[in-house]
Image (cartoon, rainbow, N blue to C red; front, side, top):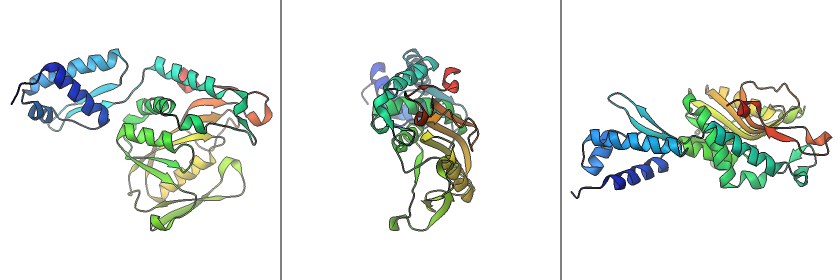
Length: 273
């Protein structure tokens, strides 16, 4: 076998890590691929860890033991996280984004990979240790963000619908009350999507009082699934007391229904990172 140069090995391994985040690669698999000793691979990994840290590219995490190995976690530094959210706040704070009913137009931002990936990096940095089995969201503008988090964690994405489709097969359905309304709505998900006892990470785009997310959490109980964390892109300042606890939002916004200007800023959680 032709001897592979170190820079070539590192380029190949970096490509493999970046293409399969949160996936464990054993030293033996790299040793067999390149035909060299595991000690040499370990030296290569140490160099890559330094490169990833220096350029804020994420983290190479080592798992020791007989079944151990190396996996890449897409992460973002505290400084870069705050800068990214400040940038997004600037984009969303323009008054022409104000919509009737107290909403902000965010569809273009939630469809922009540059913004979505940065927000996803922040959520991954703070939720990956909760070890979810899947990412769950409602069928709404939050799907691209939830999908990005699922991709970066190499986990399944579960999208809860508002109506049953014939292609879903047998479904579980519950009623929930979004935005504090007294009129309930229905959410439904196929029984084949979630296994009892799994762990769920909830990701959504916008939260006012938390009624929709509470509905998702109630849905998870129907599957005996544990909610390991809740992340939302934007939460309103009012009501201050939501119907869900322990959520983490990237941004907070005043109720634009009663103000002339959009006042959007990083959440206290982001500021305190």
